[in-house]
Length: 114
Length: 113
Image (cartoon, rainbow over the protein chains, first blue to last red):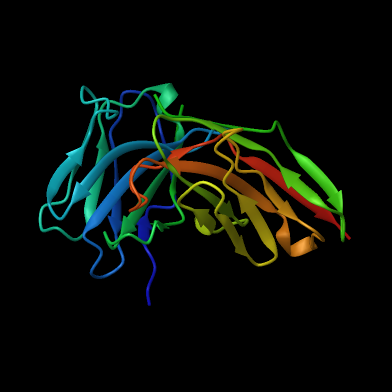
């Protein structure tokens, strides 16, 4: 079974530029999450999708971050314009949405904002 | 709100040593508790879980017991191996589906031969 795919793995941009990250969850997983992991901290939830609908985006900085999951499969997270404090690893995870308590994470996309 | 606190790291041990990584939580009600592990160059993966008080989760020689009276979920292993070197995250969820995880800061474990 293929895992959660993310790209790009690494991205370096200057502040005020834009960037987009892509995630393809495990086939059949209805629930998809984006987490932000700043160096030395645990992952923090940005947004949760159930199929193509948003379940929770209360922690997403909506003035600069946006995310979509148009067909209920893959998802894109965009940052525009980027700030220095956005430097982090962006993790995508998916979940079959049964009571297994297990999220499957991708390897992450590491963003460096200069 | 919900929060998870892990022992300050990093932790460095010799092979076959006993491991304890402390984790305490703050949450209302009855959260589910998890340990996730991140090996070098890999994504986070579930190590073990416990969904109610006094439950013991176990996997790969690791164990953790859900202690509601002390709001703790400490990770233990009797004899660590070099291959256990990784970052360990304690996490909680208010729903048994495991969604919307709240993570601790992570503890880097290095095991030397």
